[in-house]
Image (tube, rainbow, N blue to C red):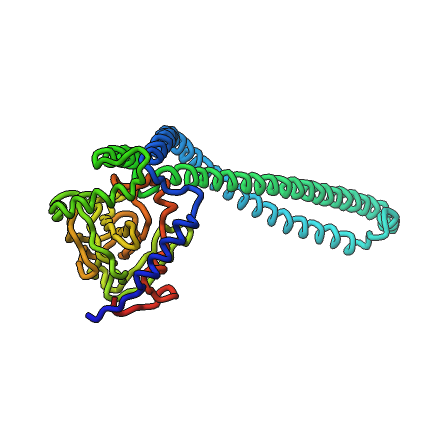
Length: 407
């Protein structure tokens, strides 16, 4: 397969230098062992506090979920009550309309619209005592019935108004409960998820940070020595003495210089960009759900593990522009290399997959200036601010879902 080098070494050096001079975040990488030790102590303390908060939140979340269930039941009841009230109001409106029409017809039929005098005219228009008594009885009955109709009409109107007020109150209660429900859900999402959903677990972060300090001490880094310089010195010395053939850890191997950066798959398309909603890398996919994945440049396998969600993850350390860069490949379905292996851009390191926290087969690719694993030069907190845009190194199509062919 014909290769296309994407970016020259000089351009890479320039880009990396720009990140060193103008860091992405105020949380810069520690440079000396003493600074790194201080960062680890501070970060470990913060993590332990977060860990305690997570434990506390687990209880709070259980209570919140119970309250959510109660609110949802209350909402269901209110919805039913509102529906019943609305039906009653509609029926009352119809009855009011019918009573009004009935009263109107009585008055029109007996021509009583002019007031009570019409009753008298009707009563005294009798031609006999018997007829007069009959007419008086009719007038009395009509009057009573009309009064009854009007009273019922008044009661219905009053009931209707009360029902409307009750309906408005229940609708307000529904709105308030809905707001509370969203707030409770948001609390779970914003509070607990922020503490628990990061790729490495809290204890993993603490352990790796402490292991890093021990690692730098073990390779002879001085308290005021730049840890990256110390790492390079150690790796070069180890390589010149014939060590680091790939059988040891990544820290025992001097990676070959990265001569260029290439796409990790023969073909595919971008599904999510770097820093889209805080996304630390770029997501790539292909209709072939297990397409081979290659190293983006020459390097050495730095770490290989399953994250907390069960995703297969590989990390490769690259040497370019006088310093190390790291590439991360997540959600793999298979991997074919081990920690300490020397790889080139032609090395098939694994296959794309759907492992871990993933909703579909894809490759999550990150490029960083440090790594949070032992010997990577930073904690997880700093790692998140060390990511670089993979597009600065690799020529991906500009749009989402736009295919590329060839590396």
